[in-house]
Length: 94
Figure (cartoon, rainbow, N blue to C red):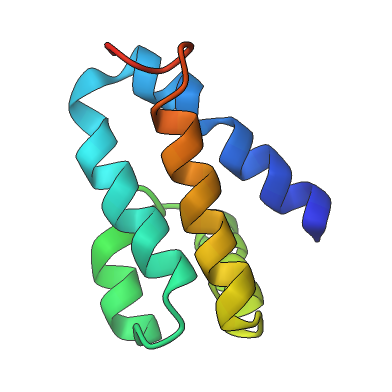
């Protein structure tokens, strides 16, 4: 599962670069994925336009559940990593 997390987070700069209008939506989706206090219903409202296929929806649910089981420290570290990625030379300016 850690490998899946790494791949999903590694795509952030690529998504940011290829879809400049999507970064705010991506930030919101990541924040709600990581935040264990966000209900699954609220999460579905956030990601519904990206999860139109059943298998994508199930995968996103599992991804959300994975983060819900993590410690607060791990969740915070993901936010730190996201911040570092967005402020890297590779992503800034897109």
